Length: 277
Image (cartoon, rainbow, N blue to C red; front, side, top):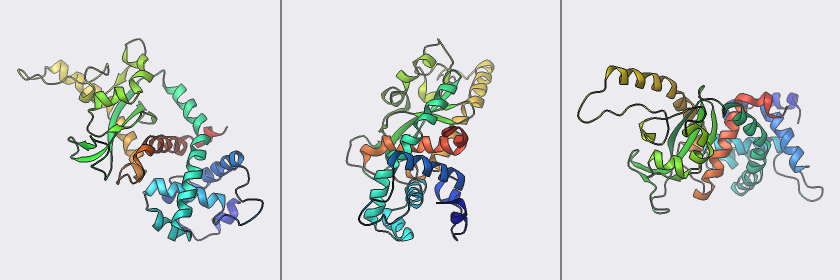
Protein backbone atom coordinates (compact mmCIF):
# COMPACT_ATOMS: atom_id res chain seq x y z
CA UNK A 1 0.00 0.00 0.00
CA UNK A 2 1.41 3.39 -1.02
CA UNK A 3 1.14 6.67 0.92
CA UNK A 4 -0.72 8.23 -2.02
CA UNK A 5 -3.47 5.59 -2.01
CA UNK A 6 -3.92 6.04 1.73
CA UNK A 7 -4.22 9.82 1.52
CA UNK A 8 -6.89 9.55 -1.20
CA UNK A 9 -9.28 7.70 1.09
CA UNK A 10 -11.82 9.90 2.97
CA UNK A 11 -10.90 8.66 6.45
CA UNK A 12 -10.21 10.47 9.74
CA UNK A 13 -6.61 11.11 10.68
CA UNK A 14 -4.86 7.89 11.62
CA UNK A 15 -3.18 9.59 14.56
CA UNK A 16 -6.54 10.24 16.21
CA UNK A 17 -7.64 6.63 15.77
CA UNK A 18 -4.44 4.69 16.37
CA UNK A 19 -2.03 6.99 18.20
CA UNK A 20 0.42 6.73 15.28
CA UNK A 21 0.71 8.94 12.21
CA UNK A 22 0.68 7.63 8.63
CA UNK A 23 4.45 7.46 8.31
CA UNK A 24 4.76 5.47 11.54
CA UNK A 25 2.03 3.08 10.43
CA UNK A 26 3.66 2.48 7.05
CA UNK A 27 7.00 1.81 8.71
CA UNK A 28 5.38 -0.59 11.15
CA UNK A 29 3.52 -2.34 8.31
CA UNK A 30 6.82 -2.89 6.51
CA UNK A 31 8.41 -4.47 9.58
CA UNK A 32 5.39 -6.69 10.28
CA UNK A 33 5.33 -7.90 6.68
CA UNK A 34 9.06 -8.69 6.86
CA UNK A 35 8.35 -11.02 9.78
CA UNK A 36 5.16 -12.76 8.67
CA UNK A 37 5.74 -12.81 4.92
CA UNK A 38 2.81 -12.48 2.57
CA UNK A 39 -0.35 -11.41 4.40
CA UNK A 40 -2.68 -13.00 1.84
CA UNK A 41 -2.51 -16.79 1.32
CA UNK A 42 -1.16 -18.11 -1.98
CA UNK A 43 -4.35 -20.09 -2.56
CA UNK A 44 -7.91 -19.82 -1.34
CA UNK A 45 -9.75 -16.79 -0.03
CA UNK A 46 -7.93 -13.53 0.50
CA UNK A 47 -7.98 -11.80 3.87
CA UNK A 48 -10.92 -9.50 4.45
CA UNK A 49 -8.59 -6.53 5.05
CA UNK A 50 -5.21 -5.52 3.73
CA UNK A 51 -2.32 -5.79 6.19
CA UNK A 52 -2.21 -2.03 6.78
CA UNK A 53 -5.93 -1.92 7.64
CA UNK A 54 -5.63 -4.97 9.87
CA UNK A 55 -2.84 -3.27 11.84
CA UNK A 56 -5.02 -0.17 12.15
CA UNK A 57 -7.86 -2.32 13.56
CA UNK A 58 -5.48 -3.85 16.09
CA UNK A 59 -4.22 -0.45 17.23
CA UNK A 60 -7.71 1.07 17.45
CA UNK A 61 -8.69 -1.82 19.70
CA UNK A 62 -5.87 -0.93 22.11
CA UNK A 63 -6.14 2.84 21.74
CA UNK A 64 -9.89 3.17 22.30
CA UNK A 65 -10.83 -0.13 24.00
CA UNK A 66 -13.64 -0.47 21.47
CA UNK A 67 -15.70 -3.65 21.70
CA UNK A 68 -14.79 -5.98 18.87
CA UNK A 69 -18.33 -6.13 17.48
CA UNK A 70 -18.45 -2.35 17.00
CA UNK A 71 -14.93 -2.32 15.58
CA UNK A 72 -15.94 -5.04 13.13
CA UNK A 73 -18.93 -3.04 11.96
CA UNK A 74 -16.75 0.01 11.37
CA UNK A 75 -14.37 -2.08 9.26
CA UNK A 76 -17.14 -4.19 7.66
CA UNK A 77 -15.80 -7.44 9.05
CA UNK A 78 -17.08 -9.85 11.69
CA UNK A 79 -16.22 -9.78 15.38
CA UNK A 80 -14.46 -13.12 14.97
CA UNK A 81 -12.24 -11.67 12.25
CA UNK A 82 -11.32 -8.72 14.46
CA UNK A 83 -10.42 -11.14 17.24
CA UNK A 84 -8.22 -13.21 14.91
CA UNK A 85 -6.41 -10.14 13.57
CA UNK A 86 -5.70 -8.86 17.08
CA UNK A 87 -4.44 -12.25 18.26
CA UNK A 88 -2.18 -12.66 15.22
CA UNK A 89 -0.83 -9.14 14.78
CA UNK A 90 -0.45 -7.81 18.34
CA UNK A 91 2.45 -10.15 19.27
CA UNK A 92 4.13 -9.50 15.91
CA UNK A 93 3.92 -5.73 16.41
CA UNK A 94 5.36 -6.22 19.89
CA UNK A 95 8.28 -8.24 18.51
CA UNK A 96 8.99 -5.53 15.94
CA UNK A 97 9.43 -3.01 18.76
CA UNK A 98 11.56 -5.16 21.07
CA UNK A 99 14.88 -3.72 19.93
CA UNK A 100 13.67 -0.15 20.33
CA UNK A 101 12.64 -0.93 23.90
CA UNK A 102 16.01 -2.48 24.73
CA UNK A 103 17.93 0.44 23.22
CA UNK A 104 15.95 3.05 25.16
CA UNK A 105 16.31 1.11 28.42
CA UNK A 106 20.07 0.89 27.92
CA UNK A 107 20.24 4.65 27.36
CA UNK A 108 18.34 5.56 30.51
CA UNK A 109 19.21 2.85 33.03
CA UNK A 110 22.43 4.66 33.95
CA UNK A 111 20.51 7.79 35.01
CA UNK A 112 18.00 8.62 37.73
CA UNK A 113 14.56 7.05 37.39
CA UNK A 114 11.10 7.43 38.90
CA UNK A 115 8.63 4.69 39.87
CA UNK A 116 4.89 4.76 40.47
CA UNK A 117 1.87 2.54 40.08
CA UNK A 118 -1.62 2.92 38.68
CA UNK A 119 -4.81 0.88 38.64
CA UNK A 120 -6.04 -0.85 35.50
CA UNK A 121 -9.79 -1.06 36.23
CA UNK A 122 -11.53 -4.40 35.68
CA UNK A 123 -15.08 -5.64 35.98
CA UNK A 124 -14.40 -8.93 37.74
CA UNK A 125 -14.85 -9.00 41.49
CA UNK A 126 -14.80 -12.78 41.85
CA UNK A 127 -11.50 -14.08 40.45
CA UNK A 128 -8.75 -13.81 41.27
CA UNK A 129 -9.22 -12.81 44.91
CA UNK A 130 -7.88 -9.42 45.93
CA UNK A 131 -8.82 -7.40 42.86
CA UNK A 132 -10.63 -4.73 44.88
CA UNK A 133 -8.43 -1.71 45.61
CA UNK A 134 -9.26 0.07 48.85
CA UNK A 135 -7.29 3.10 47.68
CA UNK A 136 -9.29 3.52 44.47
CA UNK A 137 -12.52 1.90 45.74
CA UNK A 138 -12.91 -0.29 42.66
CA UNK A 139 -11.62 -3.62 41.34
CA UNK A 140 -8.53 -3.57 39.21
CA UNK A 141 -4.93 -4.56 38.58
CA UNK A 142 -1.88 -2.79 40.02
CA UNK A 143 0.60 -1.87 37.28
CA UNK A 144 4.06 -0.62 38.26
CA UNK A 145 6.00 1.50 35.75
CA UNK A 146 9.42 3.14 35.56
CA UNK A 147 10.05 6.46 33.81
CA UNK A 148 13.13 8.56 33.20
CA UNK A 149 13.42 12.08 34.60
CA UNK A 150 11.67 13.43 31.50
CA UNK A 151 8.55 11.35 32.14
CA UNK A 152 9.10 8.81 29.35
CA UNK A 153 7.97 5.32 30.37
CA UNK A 154 10.80 2.85 29.83
CA UNK A 155 9.63 -0.27 31.64
CA UNK A 156 6.72 -1.95 33.37
CA UNK A 157 6.60 -4.79 35.86
CA UNK A 158 4.42 -7.86 36.15
CA UNK A 159 0.80 -7.10 36.94
CA UNK A 160 -0.44 -7.80 40.48
CA UNK A 161 -3.94 -7.62 41.97
CA UNK A 162 -5.31 -4.21 42.86
CA UNK A 163 -5.42 -4.73 46.62
CA UNK A 164 -1.61 -4.91 46.85
CA UNK A 165 0.16 -1.83 48.22
CA UNK A 166 2.64 -0.08 45.91
CA UNK A 167 5.70 -1.04 47.98
CA UNK A 168 4.80 -4.74 47.87
CA UNK A 169 3.70 -4.50 44.23
CA UNK A 170 7.10 -2.99 43.34
CA UNK A 171 8.81 -6.11 44.71
CA UNK A 172 6.33 -8.63 43.29
CA UNK A 173 6.36 -7.02 39.86
CA UNK A 174 10.04 -7.82 39.41
CA UNK A 175 11.11 -4.19 39.08
CA UNK A 176 12.88 -4.16 42.46
CA UNK A 177 15.15 -6.97 41.28
CA UNK A 178 15.58 -5.59 37.76
CA UNK A 179 16.58 -2.13 39.06
CA UNK A 180 18.46 -3.27 42.15
CA UNK A 181 21.39 -1.01 41.30
CA UNK A 182 19.04 1.97 41.73
CA UNK A 183 17.80 0.82 45.14
CA UNK A 184 21.04 -0.18 46.84
CA UNK A 185 22.80 3.18 46.66
CA UNK A 186 25.52 1.81 44.37
CA UNK A 187 24.28 3.62 41.29
CA UNK A 188 21.77 6.21 40.07
CA UNK A 189 18.88 6.90 42.40
CA UNK A 190 15.24 5.86 42.13
CA UNK A 191 12.52 8.28 43.22
CA UNK A 192 9.10 7.30 44.56
CA UNK A 193 6.23 8.72 46.59
CA UNK A 194 5.38 7.86 50.19
CA UNK A 195 3.93 4.54 49.06
CA UNK A 196 7.50 3.34 48.48
CA UNK A 197 8.90 4.44 51.83
CA UNK A 198 11.59 1.98 52.92
CA UNK A 199 11.73 0.32 49.48
CA UNK A 200 12.93 3.13 47.21
CA UNK A 201 15.94 5.19 48.34
CA UNK A 202 14.57 8.64 47.54
CA UNK A 203 11.09 9.39 48.89
CA UNK A 204 9.55 12.38 50.69
CA UNK A 205 9.54 12.56 54.48
CA UNK A 206 6.37 11.31 56.14
CA UNK A 207 4.93 13.65 58.76
CA UNK A 208 5.40 12.13 62.24
CA UNK A 209 2.40 12.00 64.54
CA UNK A 210 4.11 13.98 67.29
CA UNK A 211 5.43 16.99 65.36
CA UNK A 212 5.29 19.01 62.17
CA UNK A 213 7.86 18.61 59.44
CA UNK A 214 10.85 20.90 59.77
CA UNK A 215 11.67 23.58 57.22
CA UNK A 216 14.54 21.45 55.91
CA UNK A 217 12.25 18.41 55.53
CA UNK A 218 9.61 20.47 53.76
CA UNK A 219 12.24 21.84 51.39
CA UNK A 220 13.50 18.30 50.72
CA UNK A 221 9.96 17.07 50.00
CA UNK A 222 9.44 19.94 47.60
CA UNK A 223 12.60 19.08 45.70
CA UNK A 224 11.68 15.39 45.52
CA UNK A 225 8.17 16.14 44.28
CA UNK A 226 9.52 18.51 41.63
CA UNK A 227 11.39 15.56 40.17
CA UNK A 228 8.80 12.90 40.89
CA UNK A 229 5.78 14.45 39.17
CA UNK A 230 7.04 13.43 35.71
CA UNK A 231 5.99 9.83 36.38
CA UNK A 232 2.38 11.04 36.58
CA UNK A 233 2.78 12.49 33.11
CA UNK A 234 4.19 9.20 31.83
CA UNK A 235 1.29 7.26 33.33
CA UNK A 236 -1.18 9.72 31.78
CA UNK A 237 0.33 8.98 28.36
CA UNK A 238 -0.05 5.25 28.97
CA UNK A 239 -3.64 5.69 30.09
CA UNK A 240 -4.42 7.48 26.82
CA UNK A 241 -4.45 3.91 25.50
CA UNK A 242 -7.95 3.28 26.81
CA UNK A 243 -7.49 -0.46 27.16
CA UNK A 244 -5.62 0.43 30.38
CA UNK A 245 -8.02 3.04 31.72
CA UNK A 246 -11.69 2.50 30.77
CA UNK A 247 -12.39 -1.03 31.96
CA UNK A 248 -10.14 -3.93 31.04
CA UNK A 249 -12.21 -6.46 29.03
CA UNK A 250 -9.52 -8.92 27.99
CA UNK A 251 -8.74 -12.15 29.86
CA UNK A 252 -6.82 -11.27 33.03
CA UNK A 253 -3.82 -13.52 32.16
CA UNK A 254 -3.23 -11.29 29.11
CA UNK A 255 -2.86 -8.13 31.21
CA UNK A 256 0.94 -8.39 31.39
CA UNK A 257 1.21 -8.71 27.61
CA UNK A 258 -1.19 -5.83 27.08
CA UNK A 259 0.76 -3.50 29.39
CA UNK A 260 4.09 -4.32 27.73
CA UNK A 261 2.64 -3.84 24.24
CA UNK A 262 1.18 -0.46 25.15
CA UNK A 263 4.52 0.64 26.66
CA UNK A 264 6.32 -0.36 23.45
CA UNK A 265 3.78 1.44 21.27
CA UNK A 266 4.07 4.57 23.41
CA UNK A 267 7.86 4.44 23.02
CA UNK A 268 7.42 4.03 19.28
CA UNK A 269 5.18 7.11 19.13
CA UNK A 270 8.04 9.29 20.39
CA UNK A 271 11.07 7.45 18.99
CA UNK A 272 9.90 6.01 15.67
CA UNK A 273 12.93 7.35 13.80
CA UNK A 274 15.22 5.23 15.95
CA UNK A 275 13.00 2.14 15.93
CA UNK A 276 14.15 0.43 12.74
CA UNK A 277 17.35 2.33 11.98
